[in-house]
Amino acid sequence: MNIAMWSGPRNLSTALMYSFGARGDFDVWDEPFYAAYLDRSGRDHPMRDAILDHGEVNPAVVARRCIASTPGGQPHFYQKHMSQHMLPGIDRSWFAEVTHVFLIRHPARVLASFDRKLERPGLEDIGFRQQAEIFDEVRGMGAPALVIDSADIRRAPEVMLRQLCDGLGLPFDPAMLHWPKGGHARDGIWAAHWYDAVHRSTGFAGPEGPLPALSEHLQAVCEAALPYYEKLRPYALPCPPKAQES
Image (cartoon, rainbow, N blue to C red):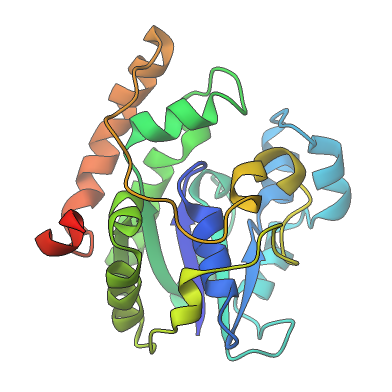
């Protein structure tokens, strides 16, 4: 099984990649289209030159690899995709050959975290619009489109990962709850800038507190992103009340 996990930045996406990467039956791929996105968009991200030097800038080549066997020979292939990387004009026919999951997070939390790494992000930087677009496209194909909220994973990691595995038709593996400190061998070269917190972790952090206060600029972006989050939220795998209390 090849899994395309769609999210935006600062969305628990790296921790979830580490979770699947801790399983012996999975290989993982960190943001396959990042170099192609930077090349086509011209965006000036941290470590841009290094990412372009080390990554594949031809999206057609990336797409072929997304539907191929795992480089490590494992039966399953988890791909951590950033929704904003799927720019207009990039072929999406490969969508029909993978299983899709959508990882969502409240935009206020995303923006408060992302602003510390990329100053004054806009709506197009955080992937909410693009994620909703991809969700509609996948559902329009008649393909399954699982949705899971990062807040629910943090409230009840085992409960939610069991539900996710059930939805994927996979057995749950307790190894998904922990990983070694210091990162993963499949981390992208950009990990040095973006992954400092998750590199210090060995499992999912606990429940989040109240929504953060935002600057005027970030609040405007949050309000623009919120309808896309609210569109996908009703489809999210349920977090049982007892699990939320634990």
